[in-house]
Picture 1 (cartoon, rainbow, N blue to C red):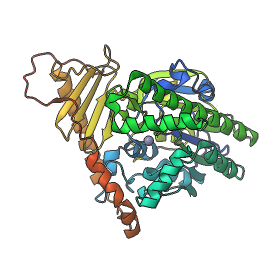
Picture 2 (cartoon, rainbow, N blue to C red):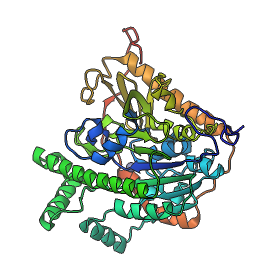
Picture 3 (cartoon, protein in one colour):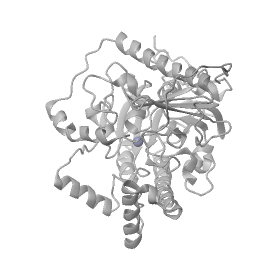
Length: 472
Ligand SMILES: [Zn+2]
């Protein structure tokens, strides 16, 4: 029975006669360590920091995937990417949401909410992969083009600093939609401004040329980059964050003028993953180190405590259940995560570990003390003692075989559980249409070059002599 329809309070949720809104703001490639509210020394994010002050900040939030395609199934459906593999999957970059699992948008639409998504020029989150499910309005531009003209257009957009649709344009559409809404809506905004390539808007022509050259070196010759060049790239990233943050501030101001504020609307702000800045010899994302997995997550709105930081380790699996709980709705059975609201009242998180996936190739299991990464393609693995090595530099897999074994089993059980759940639901998964297959033809090729570099030490036979250390 649906508690929302009965007008019953559930946790901190509200009854039906006071419908409220949820605005889910997702920022691509926003690493936690570059936000002021999470300790960054430079003033990159004053508006996001101010929003955090008005609500609850989860300072140890981790993504369940190293890229958008593996992280967003979790954010939107509270399942793992590996539970969304259907026969028509193409590769780890392109994952279609399984119809077996409800998305948060579908749940809210079924409850009568108006729903809209303004989500940029973002192919892996397009309607082909099921992200439009549950949305009345789903604004997208699909661009898989790989012809010479497409490539020339892409290059021109980069040169003009318009790599993706900019935040101000997303905001314009969002404000226009919001101005026609009554209470009871769910809005998803996805921003790409922090995503590679880092080409801030207001650069002089010479600085832009310099930034493009640096970008080329990042892809072609990153090992030859000097420390100064690396720092210059990070400065470009920070400049992108400043722009994005200003746009978030602008969005909040314009929403306030429409009467949409944290007094009547829940704001959930989160990133799908961060980016690597050569800490492990690479740029970008797709790996499962903390610079990629550690993300900001903050929630504010009516009934939410102000200026509160929750330092417990949590994952994005809990985002959708929390949204449902905020609105006083019952969690769908298909959601694997739990609401985070009890943690705000001091309840200890029941999950001792976070599983992250780059399906078919890499999996990680993170506890408070340990981080285990397993590379299935190369049969190698890594273990880091986070208590003394938070930057994951010293692979101690051979020193702690018991921990490796224990965390390895957790990943196996996790995958088995996913398979069991997936097999227990019998839903017809429509294949891609011929037109979609044609569009996807080019992107299949990208997988062949991905993760050719072998990372970690080879798996070896060992005898465990030590007493097993507790995983906490
Ligand atoms: Zn992403």
